[in-house]
Amino acid sequence: GRGGRGQKPLITGPVEPLKVSENRWKPGEKAVASVLQRETAGFLNKITPEKFEQIRDKFCAMAVQSAADLALVIKLIFDKALTEPAFGSVYADLCVSGAERFPEFPPSEGDARAKPITFKRLLLNRCQEEFEAEKNVDLDGLSDKEAADAVAKAKKRSLGNIRFIGELYKKRMLTEKIMHECLIKLLGDVANPQEEEVECLCKLLMTIGKHIDHERAREHVNEYFIRMDDLCKPDKGLPSRLRFMLMDVIELRKNRWELKGALATTAVQAKTIAEVHAEAAAEERRQQELANSVSMSGRHGGGGRRGPPPDQERHLLRSGSGDVRQAGAGAALPMTGRAMQGGGGGGKAGAGGGGGDWQRGGGVVRD
Image 1 (cartoon, helix red, strand yellow):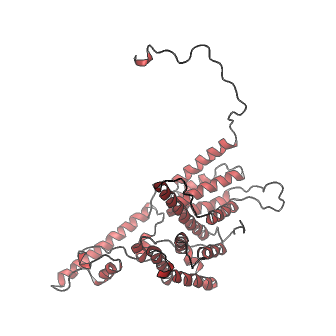
Image 2: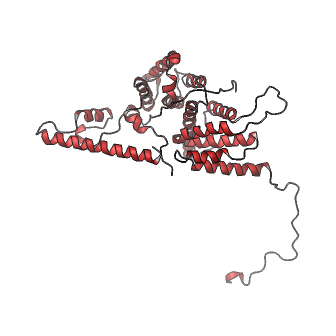
Image 3: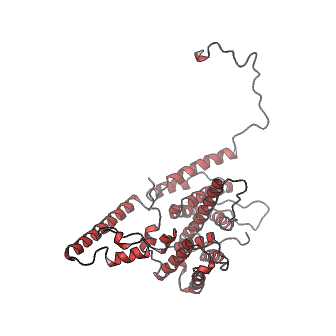
């Protein structure tokens, strides 16, 4: 019946008391690490450009008691930065604070020449491991959908890593020498270029190009762009999307690394709410000015030329938008650029310098 009436008890007779086993779980290092992991993940989920200083102070005050704890914190930062590349600069700033405030730990016993284990050393090792990791994804036993998801996830992680490396360089956590080593490796196989490496090359140059293209390194940078110009040729077998992306980077250098037009529109980075509101207001004013100018030209132009103004027509033709007559008189200028045609492109430029080295052989808003 209802409420278990009339049912026989599942256990009959006396119940033997529980025995304490030898391999029972005991609170220890794993439990402490779990607390640190939850605390670190919570801070990383909350951090934004507006709340950075407040979260940073709490983050650096966490109880990091061993080199293993330090490695865990770095792993969580890396995982977050690679999956959220738009916040790469914020996580890079957090790494700078961690390198300054987290304690260092003595090296393992038996190696008298080993250096102390520091946040920065572990961070550089992590960068090198991620960059040199095998790019091939094991798809054995996966369905078509699972294989596609695995490939997409690996590509996102690879692009996020190369962008985060660039952000760390701009914060003086990595040396310029490391950046040149990365570029040389990504440009190594010009005869048979890998699509993923070409895309990583473009992302890295859009992030750091402004800061490595100086007089002392001009010869090396010129060589990079000679190879990139060669990769743009159709006989290299690259898809149009990547060839247009390479052309965008070449054009970006000609513009002295200033993001303009479609590249500036597609560049995504963390912004404060105030910055987003200011940009939205500026765009609204630009659209209103454009509409007013088109209206005035139509009012005083009589029965002359109809359709969009000449500069807008050129934008439409370049973007492959079809018949320019389809654009209304008050239509806004479309997003243009080779990368937009090919389905990709975009990046960043910032400020920074160098510091640290690797061991050889080894607009988004968040409330």
